[in-house]
Image 1 (cartoon, helix red, strand yellow):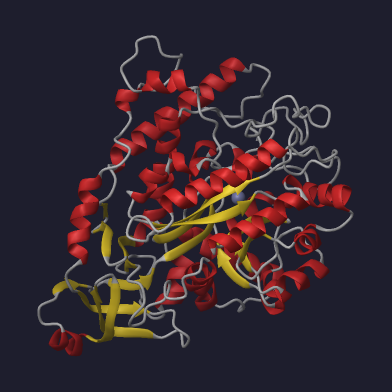
Image 2 (spheres, rainbow, N blue to C red):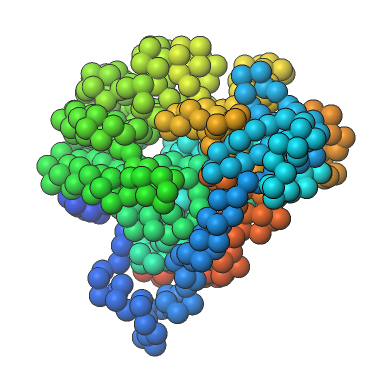
Length: 542
Ligand SMILES: [Zn+2]
């Protein structure tokens, strides 16, 4: 909590954001779901980061202490591993197939990035005698998690923004946090994204949707993580205001053009790269940040690129008030009117939603990213069972300041049971499907997130010889209710090990953790030194 701070304080006027959010500038300080938009420092400062500099800004982390942005050698080694047959045997396999089948004393064969076979260990050993055999005892094989909505660089605000949500009642003044996000250099931003990717891998994530502006900055480092990613480059054309601000909508044609150009450029540079692991999609920031004209142009671009699209939808009550003020309708109605609503649209949040909007979304067959951990932190909840019954597909996202899909999956089950006042529904098998298979399908990959012959070999190994997972009677229930990210000790994407025996193979984990801590502490210290008017959160590190 912030000492002496009440909701809304620190937002003078219509919210004093106009001066800050100049046309062309990425709005800062909106925090929350604005992730991935840490502003770049000037070119001269960037140049200064590339060599030792005794006269750097106070507190700035020297460039030479940053870890290498990418380490291609382990990726190449992993690629060689992917070319042989791998047989994980004597294990428990959670398939997440239509029957929720769990195979005991079973094996899974992996060839050329795909699942070649599943079945009894003895049968598969006879069928694949040359395979590299991996002992799967005391392990369970699960499909990898698909994080359907995140902003990796928002790790910068961990421990700060979780307790600074905007109010749910008027007056709404915009923004998702009263504190701005500190500025970082491009190199520093990459490290914070690598930190997020490490946490994602360690919690069993194999695919994620990364939303933000200027994703080209960290795309090379993200490709090097070995993860599968859908990079959705963000568009908006509202100027002088932040998300959730009902003040008049001022549109900027320059912002619109720049947004459309960034999406097209990222798609041209990255779609299908890293052996197809990287895909590029279209992101509209939020209904109150995009004019009807921009939404129509984004729909055209989505169709032309044949790409998935995403948007923050009905995220906070200030957004609903803003769209009602600007358009005279509700956010989901506005998307439908403007032609942006589509069955391939991944709608993040869907919390502050009227019954009529749930029906509209369901009729469109839209994809919903249920982001339960941030929803709980904000004190809001979507009506997941209603959205599902209306026709939406439900996936799970972590959103800001966290990448832990084990926690998000469990929080999703908990939140829905509380909201439904039902101690049985949703079942753990359903929560697992949201977090795996549904997320893959929402991102346009129906052959991922569940284990069956021919599907993508995107899977995780979970240690089951743990005090909190024994007795091993119903592994899905035990893991959804009691499992921890630390139980994950193997992660495979496209048949290649990204983490094995508890070691991340694609990144220098200690170097990134150390650098990220130094970078974030220095950045926040700089911000508070430059802005003594900002209240420091209680217990803030010196
Ligand atoms: Zn978000």
